[in-house]
Image 1 (cartoon, rainbow over the protein chains, first blue to last red):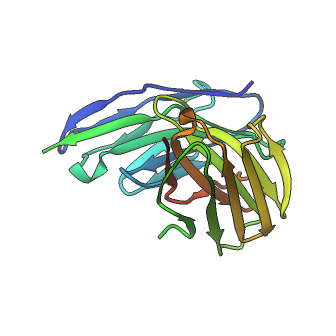
Image 2: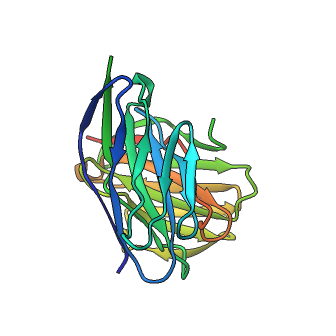
Image 3: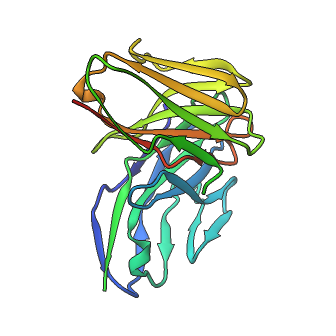
Length: 113
Length: 113
């Protein structure tokens, strides 16, 4: 079956540090890949997506590249801010039905001044 | 404002109470979802509605009863809940099967006492 693996965290960084949150997946065929972000007290927001191999999704300084050869979709940001503190979810969506969206467990990011 | 509105934001109910959660979207999406988010667990898909018909029910206990009167509104009726049902309940919507991503509401924080 489909699965998404990401570290649970928390990941603690100082402001302006480089961020990497790893995400690997298992799926047959060609899923779409997503990163969602959840700020404290809120629901999930779509941060970025990629629909085919080698696509790069980007938004708000975050980016991730769909790597089919390593089945990965790692999230990166060059310089984090305190306001980036949130929980980040990697997800994949596969054709074949409405419940073919699989979420990772979420990685909590804490950015300290 | 994400485009998906959930009410109430917070709800405390006794185990013998009956209450309802409401979700509303005016994005023109044709599928709506209920998810349960508990601490230290992956997101759990509870129900999926497509064009107002229930498509998926992931073996959710009958004390949770969904209702989708039209494509813009989704309810989750609650009765005789257990303390372990305390969680954040998230509504989401999508166009089609969600290959372009979901739009989530801010959630209802439910506490069962």
